[in-house]
Image (tube, rainbow, N blue to C red; front, side):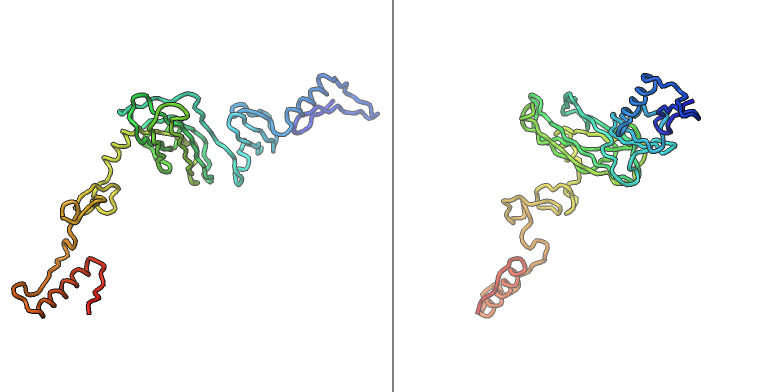
Length: 293
């Protein structure tokens, strides 16, 4: 009776004691079948993540055509190839072939696409996106923002953790590839996440960005995010300011600067004293050199 090879289960006819073939070989059923099995397993077998081989052999490699993952059968589980060292390549992508929803001034931060993948805790993940933002007819130009958010589980919301900084979309013209604003970003998630994880791309309208700035820290001190113009502490001075105490503080304001000396009918010596005091006072606020002799 014939036997089968360990890995690919190829049929092998047996020989008797006389050296003659005990099994009759059916070319279609045996030889051709063996050739088909070999052809199927040349290189890596092409499968999908939901249709892995039911009878694998230890060390068998497969390529999941729907995820791009290469997996190896360890003898007990289908594990990611190179899991403990080398890169596993792309873990997911999203391609939008139709325009996203049109946003208005009343629109909150809106998700346009998201990817859910299985994270491995000792790996670093790179997130990249590219998007075209258009200005609808009659809309007000302005700076919208694209941002990436992430969360454990199968969904992500506009209140979840933001990854990296915002990408501004300066939308000032009309529709189309030529007139729209192309935006892109690249971020990293450091090792530590594990299991189901979802990353989403969100957009805020120029009006929402303005509202965000209106709610932001303002004039609270030198480290405030925003400063208005004025003479108070924490404010900024306009570019054409003069030290008149209105648009900005007067020179020496709050420094208790006092000019001393005789004011009525001074003698020459007293005038010299007043001049000396005036020079000392000016040198506190103006970079001047006293070259008198």
